[in-house]
Amino acid sequence: MIWSALRLSLIVTVVATSLVVVIGTACAFILAKGKFRGRELLDAVITLPLVLPPTVTGYYLIVLLGRRGLIGSYLYELTGWSVVFTWWAAVIAAAVMALPLMVKSARAAIESVNPQYELASYTLGKGRAETFFRITLPLARRGIFAGIVLSFARALGEFGATLMLAGNIPGKTQTMPLAIYETVVAGENKQAQILALILTALSLTAIYVTNKLANSRTAGLY
Amino acid sequence: MLYVSIKKRLGACEGGGDNRVRDKEERTFNLEVEFTVPGGVTILFGPSGSGKTTCLRAIAGIVTPDAGRIALGRQVFFDSATGVNLQIQDRPVGFVFQDYAVFPHFTAEQNVLYGVRAEGSKAAKRKRARELLQLLGIEYAAQQYPRELSGGEAQRVALARALASDPAVLLLDEPLSAVDVKTRERLLKEISALQQRTGIPFLYVTHNTAEAKAIGTSEIILEEGRVAQVC
Figure (cartoon, each protein chain N blue to C red):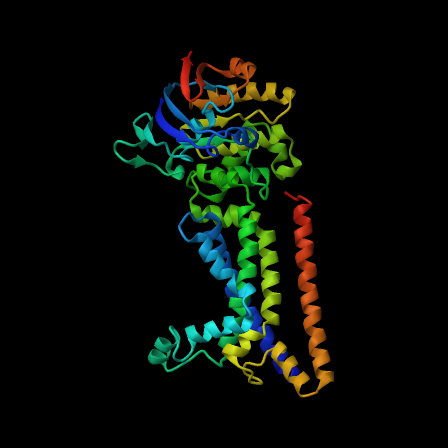
């Protein structure tokens, strides 16, 4: 059980983090540079899973994606497939929970890039996309990388929303945190201990790496 | 010849090239200027908060005037009457910033290379970047990053980069205010020589009288958002 849970956790976390990096960076860019009404509202909605109880976030995901959900019902009608209780549900739950950390981190990083550099790029005839990928993103890379590490750690530890949307099916949707819960409930303390230690080590590494990045940024490499 | 005629109501955070000035400018004022920039080095002179930087930014397309017209020869950059407003990228304008704005993650050569607008092979672009670094006398620093450069060197890189995009006019926003006095004197001569070599008009913003005298071939004096004198 340990190894299947570990394997699933890593797959789910890697896929979720990849989604979060792309979507989160795009959201961060829109929030940092966009001038539209409801910008802060969008930020608030993205941030919500950070403060809501994970079970509530999971509940909303069911309302959205469940077989009778707002989006899920169309999907079920079209394909006869529902995301609920599949490993994709675990990916979505983990991604939604990790997204705020990515967006917060990346937005702050993008906003901290001196706009003068972007203006300089524009005056050299470069478009917005080229300027973003060649100037803004490289200059914001530390904060973005810190966001990736934090998202990875958050996705790895995701429990509540995953349980709601993906359930706790051994070998199918049972990630490490769920496996820990089940082993403790079943009184298998030895197994729980090993799983807990693995998760702790991974999370500790993530925090260490993030802090290191944050410190070298304030040390003023640029 | 660059023709500028603009009106712009400025809020507290739009004017001024530098933050210290910006904080003091807790008022709105109206910029309303009309002038032409002939060849040579034209000085745009005035005290802090007189609207110099805003003029420069309007020409480059960084700020949009409320009304008016900006045209370089027959190419119209901005005309409120006809609704023309070229994007920054589409204006053949080079801009040299007060604090250099050289990209910190690029070497000196990469900075200049990034600006090279001409179509062509990578080798041709590199050659052009090399020529410009040579022209500015900093080819020795080609592989160095901005954090390893002195203020004078960084501004030379910025000049080379601005020229790399083959601008039809070069705008300089107090380019020497952050370099030491000795470097300033040398760079003034170099900028003057650079103008003669490239033949494009330079519009040079400063509030330093000595700088204006040393480099200007003509001068526009701004006061409180108005043209006070042209000479």
